[in-house]
Length: 330
Image 1 (cartoon, rainbow, N blue to C red):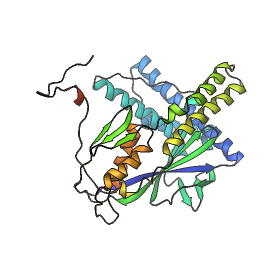
Image 2 (cartoon, helix red, strand yellow):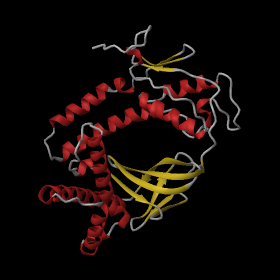
Image 3 (cartoon, rainbow, N blue to C red):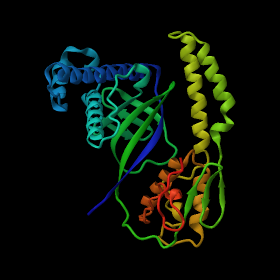
Image 4 (cartoon, helix red, strand yellow):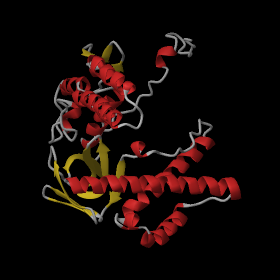
């Protein structure tokens, strides 16, 4: 079976003042559509015990589009994205109910909690250093690596006063899977970020701990501001920038995620003796947390076509050394 590989590239957009107003207006419209779609589904079931489906809401949007100039000003695929989000939210709700988990019913979103727009090809395309979006125009952007592949979807994310574009590209068939000949054991922890199977220790960078004073100062400043005031909005942005700096420190020095040497594999497929441990140290030392480190390793592993055996590590430290019978540590 042919497996395709998709990659997501992050672009720093440089919109003009007029384009920024357009994007903010589109966010407001999509947020209103999301809340309206959620309200319709809730009220239909509460009053009539009737389910509202995604195609039904799409037909209503088609009827509403000629009458509303705001909805008419954005691409139809962009206007349907809030409806798809509501559909995914309810699908996840019913899935958790069937699994006996905490349901987590969908909530309404304020404008501050709705920060992204999604659109699919062919409603956008990339020409050189310009991102062309249907009805919204062209956005200049800055990319840190060459974009390779066929664009499939685009997500425009508002991060404070900045805008990012996350493009999903189809890079073609994935490399054939092959077994891993070298084993590397990783034991993650708190005092040390990880201990590898060769006995080496990867120190915990603790980027958040080093920025605690700055974050605490911004949090105190935000708490003193009056709700709804302009000063509170500026303080909220300052706190956001402080957390973004922590995230950037965690990504600083990170090797390219498409580097096939993530597990000590040359582009030609030859294995480097003792390479995996050296590459793992680099990858783990620049990661923000354990999940981010494992995700980076999994991405590089897929790019190289490697398929190591997965090891289930949950609750393994609660087993006795003789009969491996789990015991409670509480």
